[in-house]
Length: 264
Image (cartoon, rainbow, N blue to C red; front, side, top):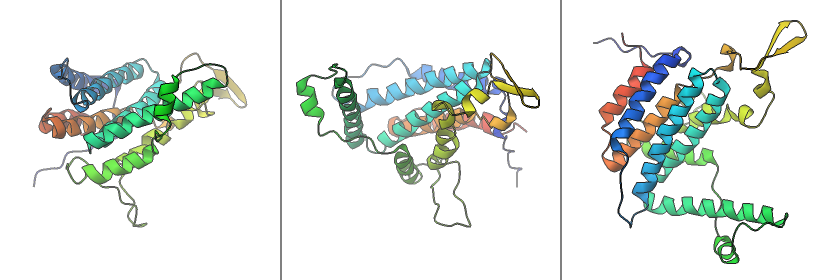
């Protein structure tokens, strides 16, 4: 039996390796775009817009890591996760889910309009207000993640089902429900200006005395794993391949494996 590949701990993904993998993914996307679509079906251009967005955010995250802005990279990682989760949910049933997704945008705009009215500002016309009144707001992101795990684990071997029914057998963190906790929830303390955010700029060289630095101080206790970004975008590419026949699954696996596994 051949030796199994050694998994690379996420903490060992250095900026150079992240850059190499990011360049491979962005080069792959550049082979696909730009691409023009005929009118009539909204899903293909929407899907390709998510593809372009994912590549751009991955590049931006990598630049932040290279410049030592780990906290900002974590915040962007959270945004990447939300985009990819939404994309994978849309791809379950594009015809139905795109309509719901557009409705969420209408509901958000209506809320902005109603909040702005308190300050004498109108965001929407009366016609649009009437049209948006029945729009339903989006469900919690965790619910979308559960739907992604349930559907895509039955349609692609890249996905794992999420099952927390057995207390003696904890569910895999390598699911979208797992990523929701490990990526999305974990970064909330940075997004929402929790004490953990300014703490990243502090050191205490002397007991009770804090020093504030102009740049974030690297700290292994932060458990920042920007390499998650490659795995998450990899899931988008795999779903893209199922729905559009591009890219080839083997190509995506080869790119992500270069980061996930040691070469020996």
